[in-house]
Length: 138
Image (tube, rainbow, N blue to C red; front, side):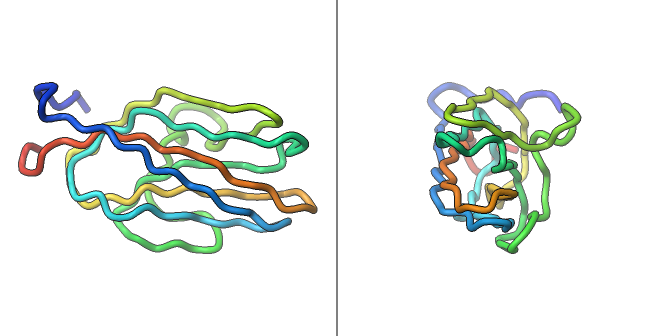
């Protein structure tokens, strides 16, 4: 998909912040409000606390529904088509990836999927940054 051309004055960048506690041995999904504009993903980021020991798997999804299941959400996993692992893990670090994907239609929801394989709760601290384009300019 080739990038959509817009003037700098028409662009707006927003970051959706996701903060939650993921219970031990659980899977959770978290959903943004509806974004009623064409978008381009810009950046995904997640911070992992000390002693997370790569037991919190975090995925980034874009979907056209607002469902928030206790598990993996439906929709497009932004990391799935570009490598063998479709989630991020870490320990006492912050992962920031510049990752551009164009979605020329409207009505998307940003979703974060977290799977805690540990025996203790972990804090989810993730950000999903997208660029919005004007309505009607798909």
